[in-house]
Image (tube, rainbow, N blue to C red; front, side):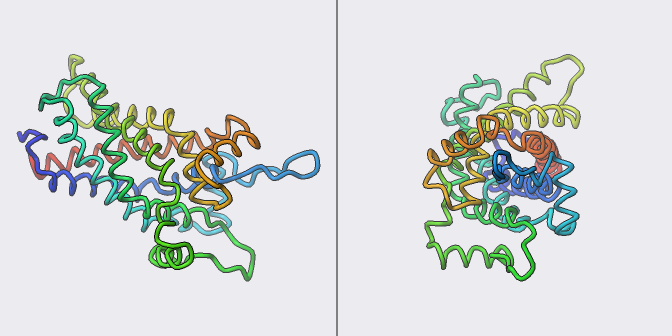
Length: 296
């Protein structure tokens, strides 16, 4: 059996990029629902507020499918795949070598601190490269059903890239980079470090082996920690990318807190966990099987 540390960067990049893209295709409807819930704002009517259009995970999925068609749930899948190919490939591909470098050892049994630090660094590096794909994905997902006669801003992913550069400048592709780095570095640390740690812990329990059940349990643990830690930053990131009214990360944070309260930062928590929990299970399970198929 090959040592994971001896698999080339190109090999790990290809395996993780494939696994991330497969997970994206399977779970992007949940991500679309999450983005719509996060972008939904309170609309005041006199002394009260209008009833929200989207209610809960299943309600949001049903509303989108009913009003916009079932395929609207896959809005943003093309830039989503662009993102996962770059981000997914880099963050996982760089994790083992960075972890070995900062810990000074190739041993799998190292302190959690080094795992977290390595995942923070690789998550930040990966999203700096992939931020334009994330921006376009959120913009496409944010476009709901428009009134008759009102054209959508973007006809597709490639046109969205072109339109953003033409109208807003190349730098606009890195809109929301600050919260995106914070969000993805933290979520990556929660996912990779917790998956690494949970898997290592499970394998120490008598009767457990490095099999599908272990990968599923570790993937669920990774998704849960990622959502608990990253949800507030994810809300700020989605709002900054989906709406240009905010001046920056701090402005978005305080405007959201002032107008909607603290719980606004956990809007879409259940669909986010449904998304990240299932995404992590599918991604890590696929990654482990692909590595076994080609390298073990």
